[in-house]
Amino acid sequence: MHRNPRFVRSFALLTAALIVAGTAVPALAGPIFSTETSRISFQALLTDGVGDPLPDGPVNLSFTIYHPIIGPVEGPIVVATTVSGGVVNVMVPVSRSSWDGGARELGVSVNNDPELSPRIPLVSVPHAFRVDRVENEELTNDVVLGQPGDAGTMKALDSAGTTTVETDGAAG
Image (cartoon, rainbow, N blue to C red; front, side):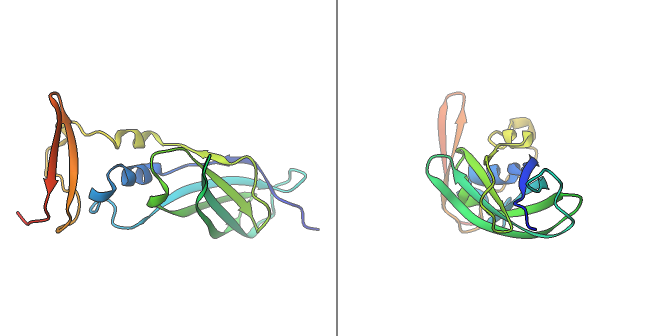
């Protein structure tokens, strides 16, 4: 007899530092982020309808990223994995284009069952809070933003106001 699985406990251990950093300066983030996909680490204890852990074996998890008001922004992303002691642990590939710094939620379904409720709020990890600032003491070597040939604008704030630096893609 098949019983509908539900979440008892989930851990959205987000490696959001990569995701948030990739969206902080998307046009200039070439060397730091060489691919268009980042990953979210996801762990959960899955149980059946009476609260018993799901048996060991294969399972398909389907993930959808939502804007809380607008709706889905990415997905479904299906990840095949194995349940062990009721626990699943997967890396979910997500596109950096799904992140604009606004609120996001993660919807999860198991083996094509209806999406579990409630959705999981996606929040920053502590390292992600430092992504939006670089202090002078940290600039001891060259800092490269973008790829050769890229054009873009970077705005840097100083104590007197805003300074704009434009790159033209020229070598040198």
